[in-house]
Length: 165
Ligand SMILES: [Zn+2]
Image (tube, rainbow, N blue to C red; front, top):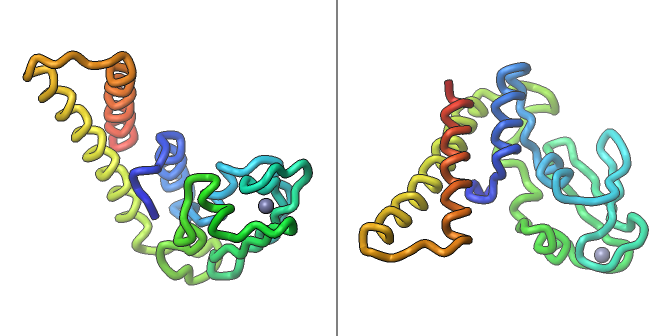
């Protein structure tokens, strides 16, 4: 699972879910649901508009197996690798991080995992701030885009601190 790609809303969701239920909520299907359009279906089978081709109606079939693994099939013929690449994921994102004992059953390691995700976010954002600080110290000016990104970093760090308390 690529930690660096975690959006802040997602981290907040992890933290919120952890507080209320303590159950594992971050499954491959959650990752996909956030990124696909026109998702419909229930239980373990979904249809969505395929991100890998110009899809007018849902032709991407998504099946969630008991262990959380996702099976993708585009009826227009796109490969699973192309589908996940089109939404910024890789094939490994179709597999759960760790074997699920059973749907909805708590997984002990999940608590540690959440903390790790938050820490890694902090580390990534702190590194970015460090680079910006170093540039400024060396007399460089930050581009508007860099400045904007720096504000985002500050907000994320503040938000992670909020979540952590
Ligand atoms: Zn397709």
